[in-house]
Length: 273
Image (tube, rainbow, N blue to C red):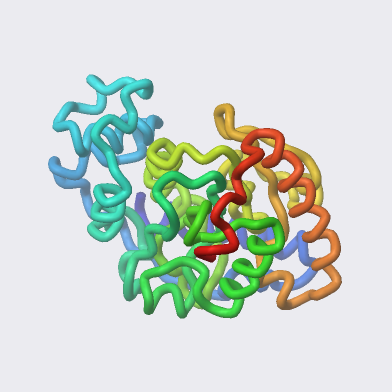
């Protein structure tokens, strides 16, 4: 994509966001410079998401097959969290690789009952290479503990994008799309019973929807056959404590569904969390 094309898309999205807020959107910088994308090397071609099948593209990287020879039903063969993390560490598919300190693949147990998906790494996460380790992470741990979940016992935590967006801005659509194959691969390997999305960015990108968080909260959706529920991002709760009560209602709804699917999910929580 050329820098001119990127500028047109950026300015269009900024205008839409400005109109939504009624003033200059806090999610967009007043000016930003873009560069033309470098041509894909032949060795990187199988990882291009332009083919429209991120599942097949990711599998092809590890199988040695061409994208055309891979079926989505074969996605995940031979993959592991370690292989996915290694590929994330090498990734240069979007501009976020230029400013990152460390990639943040995820953290948690390998056979989780629940996968928690956030937006992207923040400053602390970028330095440590781990998800949700700053103030928002401490609150997330408390939220999960309130319904007997923990990243050390029965959860895995990941993000929509694996590199920190500058100034913690919301990831652009092309950045999220560039990381989508990684997230899909993680879900395929982890096979969680349920998914909890923390914040608007996570649920919108997972479900490919533009609906607001207020429309998406309070109801279950599905990723394949996996139930998905959205709640407020912990950072939003730190900014506005009045949303803690509705967030608690979300968590109670999530726990009720989880008890139906996995009645013994909390076994071992008290001893290791």
